[in-house]
Image (cartoon, rainbow, N blue to C red; front, side, top):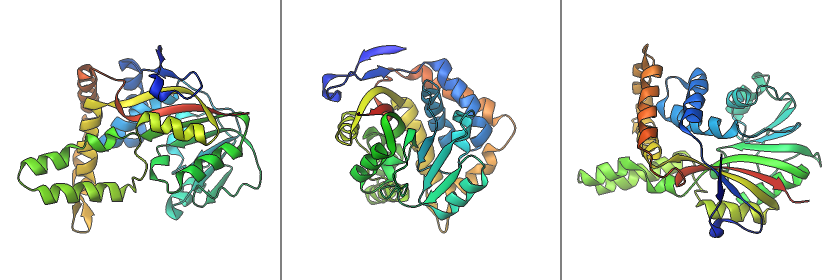
Length: 290
């Protein structure tokens, strides 16, 4: 579903098309993602949008997965891809990725190093990882250099709205605890190491500067979805001593009927969205400049 060009402020010299997801795509994404994250509401919400967006695109092999995680979501979205190499900075997560049988190789390293010795890939993928990475210009240039000329890059990122729409600090401030509100937001950003939350036009500019032509943009998680997601996610990671609130909440979401009931909640939230073009996240499909 093409919805026309992006605003001129978002477009460098290429013809970027903005695609809006429809309700049925997001709910189909929910049904798929629930098989992995059926008891974690914030991940269920965010990944539903990502899954729906990714299903519109194909990746040619071999694929470089940057910030690969444990591999389960990659396999869910791209079940037919067998030639894929993962990059992961977290040792424990890298071990899980090795055991997943999704990847031919896993490189334990920071993404800006990309120790691939001149190897070239047909496609690269980065699922919600770029916003956590220091030295982003080096990361993006390294990804471009790892691709064949004309190779594609598919990624999801958070936008500046991810910061603007956080509701828990707002509630704390309204309850007369402004210092607690500020510390909750700071702790949340530090937990996620959220260092790159850019407006969509800034993401386009950074990709362009790294040597990519941006072809498609899909806004994901608009305002109602974003605020509900952020409420759940901030509450989930709220510290209680050495533990997180999510550890206490998780058993409640494991009860029979939760997945189906929360699907109805998500469907209701989707019905309330009035501007799906302004969102807390974005999926970009880009191509390495020849």
